[in-house]
Image (cartoon, rainbow, N blue to C red):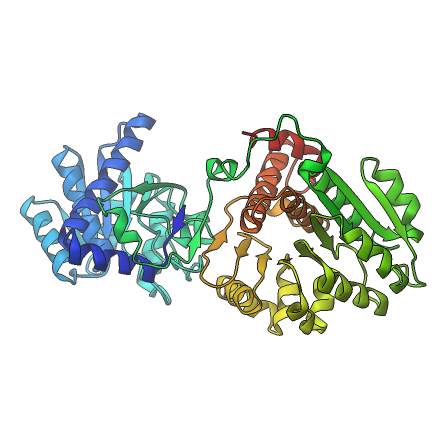
Length: 515
């Protein structure tokens, strides 16, 4: 499903106003849809709520709030309006406010009577936040910061119109103060703030309200972001062939592991196996044979010459090049180690591969030092960096990466013509120029442990080997990786869960995605 940035939403509204609904009609529809959805929730909860406080800003979001107040009053609720920032601005908002006055709905001016305003909010069964919309940025002024804190602490059910006031629509950043809602009614479409942390933590449960904007209006913007629901991910998987054999389900070659990082090879290979791939072959240094062989019983083992550092020796390149010819996907880098030998191996693999290559961990650190390798690739590349590796690939700071994750991921993928999975909270999948970025909504902090990325890399390679389109393989892997983490934490704990627990859970999770 699409995610619309603030600029894209403006484009949609401008097009609709020019060729369809007027701005005034859109505001009326938005407020009415919000009121209807709020009433449905109240009735479903059986709360018997009758007192409503609608806190309105002076812009279009406040205009939506005035409509909400009017609709509740027309349905017999005891409604009050709190003007958070003075008299409304803009033709449509002023018009809606005058209709509130015509209905004699009590209005409190926050700047003139803060005590009464706060008491109105505290005593309401339902509090509706309609102060700032998707255009907000900057800092929240001190008096409004206090108001937002009072709304968040109010005992009644709290609803935000479109976006909780104080959060940034496009980045998911929270200002110095923001409303923490129980529910958010998104107008027309989801916005990045609805699924990106920490903003999404302020949204509560999210309902998308249809306000009558036609589908053709959404086609006018580029739609730079999207996300998937469970059913959309499930639809990416084809039905498994009844008469298929292991050769029909793809072969993965994992070039991973070193003497000191055996676990990375084991976890990535197990994830590739659990993904449904027909064959998984693991190429690793022979000095790590005992621990690898003891943990991988369903893979093809390819122990190769190791050097004194315990990493693969450059002498194994001819063997790897032969085995690569049989592969449908190659994974390189998990626990590989960095040495003069592995640098040559990474270069040889990327330059000679005839199938998609998933580069993770040390392969990415090597590429960061020898960036020209990318231009020599003969097959699709999939990079899976965490923020530190992304910083090394781009030459910017980790803070700069995290401040503009979407921009960094999309520009790097486009400039280097590859698919990039930028890991972290709300992992991103960027697929190059003119392709929207996938923003993942699954996962939790229990996954923030060594080995979690190895599992993801194995899943990506496994799905890719099964001939899923690269974008679908990456987005499905990211979603299922996070979804598995959520399920494991429910059974165990955020602190105590391990990537190995997630891999053990995978066969049960994937059953839900079979068609």
